[in-house]
Length: 293
Image 1: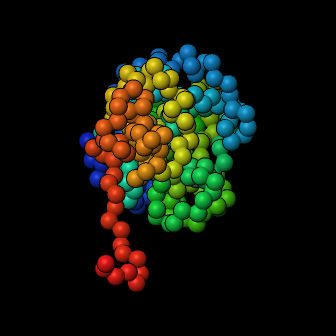
Image 2: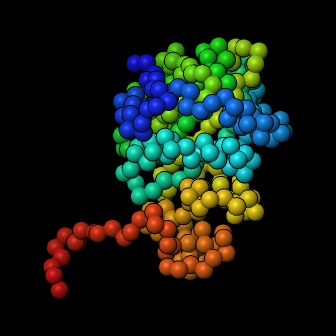
Image 3: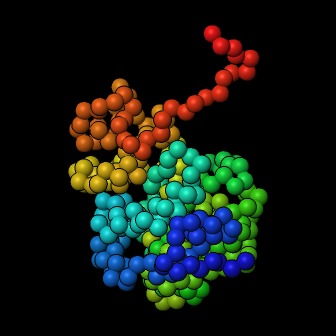
């Protein structure tokens, strides 16, 4: 199976359908190159100050710079891109709500070997989620052209329906090649890995991922983004970052206060938060053997 490619005019329905079939899809040239230039300009000081990885999996010649909401105004626009949020909302629609999971610039240096093939959802302590129950939707934005030669992310289309905990060889993967400004979508269940960089240039990719709001975030957004910056951000972005309840009653503060109210120093108007998008108490079935009083 090849990696599906969709045009920039595609819809979130089309992307979600491709993820259902293949577990991955590329939307070609979704943003202009000047957007990518701004991202690199804003993140260059942070990227230059980032150490290379401490182990083979992280990449001993790869830099991974996080905290991007606080460090790049342009990244905020990509995090909230309508096509991305529409797709995430569809793929994760079986849960009450979702949140931002990770923001990371991945700069794979020349000579870096291929990464071990893995599933991103293994970060949740290798919990055996049911087959087809997606807990994560990921994006990798190509800041540079992604080629087989310079370390394009390698994927196994259709592997989101494989058995869990498989050790799959690099030879089973194919490169998700794409031009700069394109974005690779893939689910947390897809087997994949960073490609080997055989070129003499650094390959830059922007990894922005989303997960169910009742699971812990990989990147702690509350500490990664300084509060003085967080307080200046739009409320929808703050709620996406996790300043909201997960499901019905996860993540409130002390006396049932809305975390966004606490961040912004507001008085909570209702017991469990007043966001219009927070889920309501579900109608539960009557216990077995129950009778009307």
